Length: 405
Ligand SMILES: Nc1ncnc2c1ncn2[C@@H]1O[C@H](COP(=O)(O)OP(=O)(O)O)[C@@H](O)[C@H]1O
Ligand SMILES: [Mg+2]
Image (cartoon, rainbow, N blue to C red; front, side):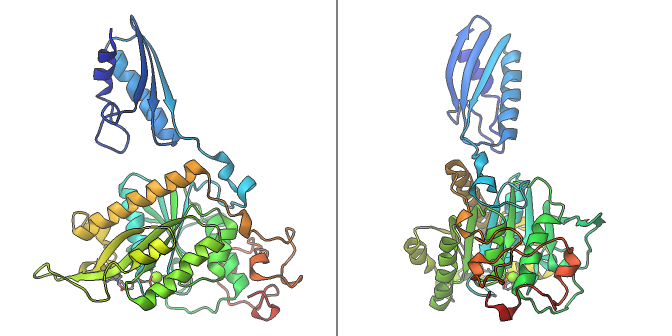
């Protein structure tokens, strides 16, 4: 038996999630053959346990088929920074979720929810286990956009089961509240709601939870960063200068909250005429590239204004799922791949920590009573249940009058 026999056998092993085999990728290293014994190293780029196990199993199977009797497949994978869980780098109240992506924008109406929906679906189509949390408590649009409006989540004990559509687990205040009901949110209620979204929803062991934030830079963003280590932040903007000004605020917020910035998605960037396919410049195009550079991040993708995107949102038929081969469908796929690469990079480097924004007050002590700032506000207790969080508060803790907010 020779090294060539080994390589020929391993050409039948594709890298999970790709069509190419591990030999073509150049992952097979240090092959040693002695009679029917073989030892080798697979030098791979993913630290996922499933990838590792699948490769060992498939490589062993192929080598056995080729006639090898003693087979040693070793894997060299990037280190999973286990210490990323908040026990070291800060707090994590949902440790079974591997990565958190905060989708934010300087203001409303720029396509934050549309982006969150289509990116979440694209990640799921790429084989990831994905959740989509609609944390925009002021304007929960995700249920309609995902086609689950009117559906109520099942209750299990004192937890809620997420809804599911397009391979994505979903939770939204819109699925819990009465339709069209307006709530006046106090800072402490926002904190409670965010905590409960993470703690009291029966999310699976997700690869990633995409979180559609309320517009702006406020209590919800701070609460989230104080509750879990955010792996990546995405800012959605439209190309007009005034929108870019707001995006700078959003990007600055990522910096302040120690959130690794994956980049900017420029939405409503040009208009592709459905009858002639010609692209016209309505709000401007590509203007956010300069802002990306300013913040040492990248312009992840540009999404044009397209009637199919709006119709997809209004009817619960997202374009990423229903028209994956359209130019826009492809751009969302590409954006999802880039985001995943970024997440893997952050995990390899172990740089997603939020220790810097954790409350400095001892557990159980309200920052209000000590006259603390918002950054030092202790997260409110979550045990009252989701319903409590959605009740207009006459609550005793951080109201607007205490100087916290
Ligand atoms: N690229 C686009 N082309 C056409 N319509 C879009 C596009 N992006 C968003 N929309 C529409 O614009 C409206 C606002 O988008 P939405 O995602 O709700 O914004 P946000 O969450 O930032 O408030 C929605 O009706 C949505 O369908
Ligand atoms: Mg929205």
